[in-house]
Amino acid sequence: MEFNPSTNLVTFTKKDIEKLDLIIKTFNGHLKPEKLGHYSIISNEELWIKIVIQFCVMGRASLIEKIFSDNEIKNRFCQDLSLKSLLSSKNPEKYITKVFEVFKPTRFWPQQAKKLSLILKEKNVINKDRVVLIDGLSHKKDYNEIRNELCKRN
View (spheres, rainbow, N blue to C red):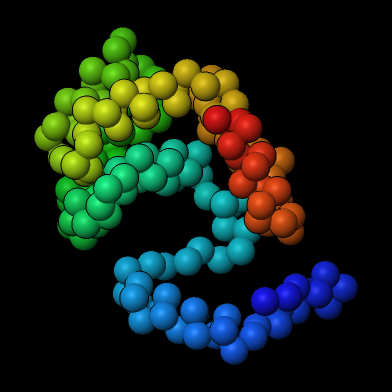
């Protein structure tokens, strides 16, 4: 696969197309890619929930998918784990652990609850009541550059 920055066109080889075909067959119906640049217009809470979901898919995505397949359960889950709820908690780790125990969004809920509570303390991720993890990033940069920057911030 080659990207031409002057035309913004991507050229795929036959091997690339075969790999993409396999990915599509494997994940069809399971993934909904966001529009390029979508992250820059989503709300702070929506971005936070996307981060929470990344902790929940550790090991298996089916548990969080089950929660998100029922709007009532999804709304309760998102409300209970909203950034506002977590930041107002006296003991976020304990609070997240209880919520994860109820909803079971991941097989590793005690460990992931601890990791998620640590993220709340990271000034490069959360500053006051705002998710700042992706501030200043651009979808126009090379994906490796973006990935490296995100790794540095966490």
